Length: 349
Image (cartoon, rainbow, N blue to C red; front, side):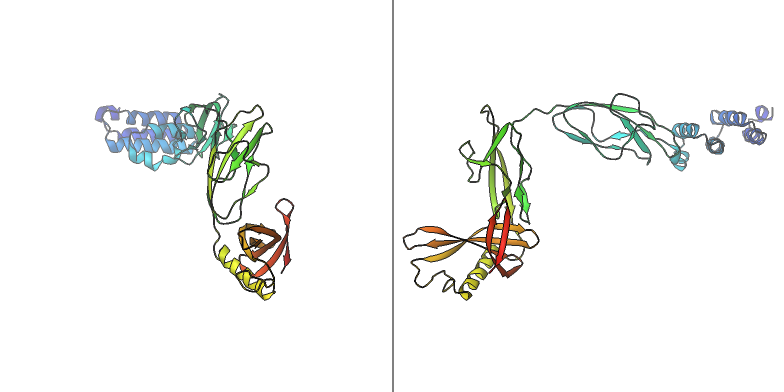
């Protein structure tokens, strides 16, 4: 009656307090709701009514009502002060629709809650998968539903997005070693289906079935190189040609530095008379041509040099000897035996 006579909302606050004191929490909430919905209440009174209501819900651990109340509160200061009770909708990193490429889909939330999701059309809950890593979507249809739970176990709205990944099949060789710069000896590897054969070139021309066949990993050449690959199916169908460009360089000593060190050692050992490769009584001279850099297991990186015997008519033949000089120590010089498949053996020289 006092409230009706005076319009003073302080009476309603007092009534709400008494209701709560005697254990009639619902009546206290209804009374505070009257203040919030009043046309005569000041903004300060409405804010106080919201805060008291929030306190009552906190005391009752009624987090679902708390989240709903804070979400619908028009007072930004109150919303900000109690933002921990809010639950936001999961955000998808890619809009739903049709894609012609694989995508990594990320789910996120701004309130730090836990996201649960399903991919089978069912409604997600706390028993569903927890989102922790991006979802890899490849060819196919996907219906992804997600929901966020805040730290108080309150769920937000379920969000569903549909994706169609439609990647046109392209018949081409699958090369696992990507183009780029490399600073360590690397092998160029490929994934070959049992029903295909790969061929490649390194001179810039398009490969054919008369080109070099790929049968095992290829040691990447030192410096810049261009590889072109093609695949042929058993029925003779040719794939598209793919091109890979590599640039392999090591820091420190370069092949020419270690080549000079090799020649000096060969002069010291009497194999040649001078660094040019001349040997008394030899009808010609030796040259040492850089082959590649290899990683010798347990020993490190070595530059390989093939020894050639050259006559003065311009002909050259391999002498059968290959030398290896350690990149980090040009005094570590060896004669090489073995091969790329079974492994190299270095014999001190």
